[in-house]
Structure formats: structure tokens, C-alpha cells
Image 1 (cartoon, rainbow, N blue to C red):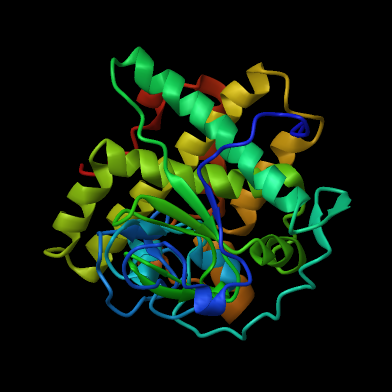
Image 2 (tube, rainbow, N blue to C red):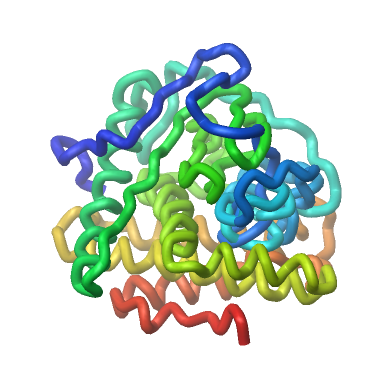
Length: 327
């Protein structure tokens, strides 16, 4: 991705190296999200997170699996992954070994080594800025104002309005404070444990979380969080999958317009599609426990995630991202 020299977003809060992640993030901390996009859909909900594989993030599965789902709900972060609206990666019910983060001064972006304290922040800031440009434009066309989210870069642990979380939680969105939380060491995990390397794979992670923010703004996450309380676990998981797939499609819309700007390089689209494939519920469960449990899916299968991202990428239209979340 041709990101160097581009505008950097001012909506970055860098609290890496802080004590226990005591940042300006409001509210409790987070654990693996499990809702839309696997994030925290409900605001201020501090229940224990569930599984990371696409349903609640109750059990911390692979760091990567939990990040797309829990962000948007405001319900349990871990739970959110399964329910949609918070994390990028689903968690399984099987607790997985914690992955020690790589050295913080040599994080990889694509094929180049960069410093987490400078170039990594620049990269994240540029990607967030590009999402701001795209979604501001889309909202303006609809006669609306896009409230830009904050992105908090942290290390080790952090508190948010959705609860407390550690690096093992993975990236997530918290609807309670409209912030995206990211420990960039997750990108190393994405590359080494999920075989999803490349700067555009990393950009996809950020764009997915931004997709949960869009869902929160247009009312999808609040409605999902309200409805899931009266649903059975299986029905909540099925709805969470549709929430997560829509966030993937929204990420594809961002990639569509980024490509129109001429910022994508050869292989970028393949990087994003590969990342979507590697973090599907079925792929994660096969990798972590050797078998799949479809009723526990909360983020979608590899094929579903890849298909919906590509659908957004091809069309660039919100109308093509109707995953029939509410039937």
C-alpha cells in the first residue's frame, strides 16, 4: 500500500508504554470482543468476555481471532466477538496459549521493518485518515455528518468503556466510547500465527474495526445489542456472524475507494483476502482445536468473510453490504 507521505489522522491516542494502559479510554477495560466484527456492541457492558472465535469472546482464543468482533456492542468484549460489533478475530471456547509479543522496536509492515514508535504510528494514522476521507464522503452524499472515531494505540493492557483488556484480546471497537483499541503487536501475531502478512492485511484489520464504528453510528450495533439479550446463544451467534460480515463488507468499501486513489499495489488485495480467510471461524477452530462447531461461529467462515470483503471492494456501495442482520 502506498501510504507514505499521506495525511495522518489527528484522532490517534498513543498510550503505549503507559502503566496498565491507563489511558483516556473511558470506562472499564476489554477482553476478547465478540460481537459485530467481533467487537463490543453494547456500551459500558463489563461482563466477562466470551470466546474469540466469532461469538462472545469469553475465552481468549488466539489473539488474532478475537479482535474483529467485540468492538461495537458494549456487551462483554469477549462476547462481542461472537456477537459482532467489536473484534476482528473470533475466539473459540478453548483457551489458547498466550503469545509473547515480538520486540516492540522491530515490527514489520509488509516487507519492510519499521519502528513501532514512529513508522508504525504513522502507518496506523495514515490508514485511519484514509478511512476518515472515505466515510466522510459517503456520509456527506447521504446528507449526514460522519463522527470520526478515535483510535487508541496501547501495549500490555488498557481500559475502555467496554471493560478492561490485555494484548491477548486483539484489536476491538468499543461503542461505549466510540474508540478503536489496537496493540500493534497483534500484527506480528497476524503474520506469524495466522500466516497473514503484509501492510494491507494490517490495514484491513483497522478498516474492519472502523466498519463496526459505522455500524454503531447507523444504529446497527445498538439494535443488535438490544436484541441479543433476548436471543438464544445459537441465534445470537447467527446474528453476530451477519454483523461481522457486514463490517468486512464495509472494510471492502474502504478498499474500493483506496484503490481508486491509486494507493493499492500489486498483491495488496490478495493480502486482505488472505487475512479474511485465515481468521474465519472455521479456520481458527481447525487450527486451535482440530474440528469445527458451526453453531458457535460468530464471525463467519473463511469463505464468507472473504466473499463479503470482496463484495464491498467490487461495488463500493453500502446497499451491497446488506447481510440481513435482522432478517
